[in-house]
Image (tube, rainbow, N blue to C red; front, side, top):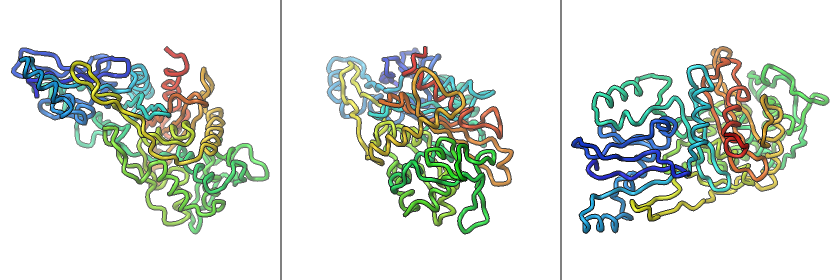
Length: 455
């Protein structure tokens, strides 16, 4: 393979993000990644290494890039006939370099010392992956190096046992997190599918006891849900202010067939089903076991055993933005021969319709209200969003842990062009870190970079 010129990986604008260059060494070609984008694009390109193999698009489109794919037979024959050195084909990704850099910079600069987290941005009506960032990241040039010492030192640093930073983990598609209150989008969708209206009255109490247990759940800060009348709020208000007690009330006392409809709705959005490759494999998200109403109450606010990838939550936002139609995300727009002849173009694919267009419109309205009530809201474009602040430690550690901060959103709020999901593990505010304070600024920056006129 190293005697053959490997094809290039290019991004949406034609920017080259991986290319092979000739060398004088016994390995005729060196795989290189532009220094100014290498770490930002590492979750997309992966690496190609003589010693450590490959990952990312380098792995999952290897047959095209190395020239062995059957679709390149004609080119191989012509190369042999003409005496020209064989060459691999090219992979064109829909990832937009500017959005990828904004997402990466937002994560890298959003926490002291850099965030551990991920950003995924999708085009709602096609499923194109517009950005997929994960931090901390790594420089694939060091693994592609022809210097064995450089390769081995870098691999050792980036693969230390027990390293919480784990820079070679693609958090965007392979790390599972509790989603916290961002999951209330799916819970609300389940309620709408069960016949509940946005005006349904729910408890505004600061805490609520889970059915048949002595365990209670509280609203953020132990507060009564804002805007209550007679001790209750509407579902719209409960969503806007992210009131946990109201959602427990919703799922445990108001819905007719709550466990069935909740799990079925989650399944329709893609949880607990095999995830189609992008072509990078995506870890399966799950709602976990829900044996009773107490478990349902916890799952309804994105806790208990609910675990999701950032890709999954970006798909949730994109589905609402797309009128209830869920599209298959894809990271490869086009495959080309070395002479730039198109071999294959990815066609947008509809997976299913988890909710109706009317239900999507209702959720959009609720997400617009939620965004207006989120710190830092307001800007050049109307955004619909939901934040989340997810507990993840043992019960005894909850008060001292730094929760995972989430933000899922799309913009503009009508005819959306982009949907995003952001998760940050280590917000600077420690136990006071929230989705609105930590993750939302990153998500808004990515949205505005595309549709808000930001440079």
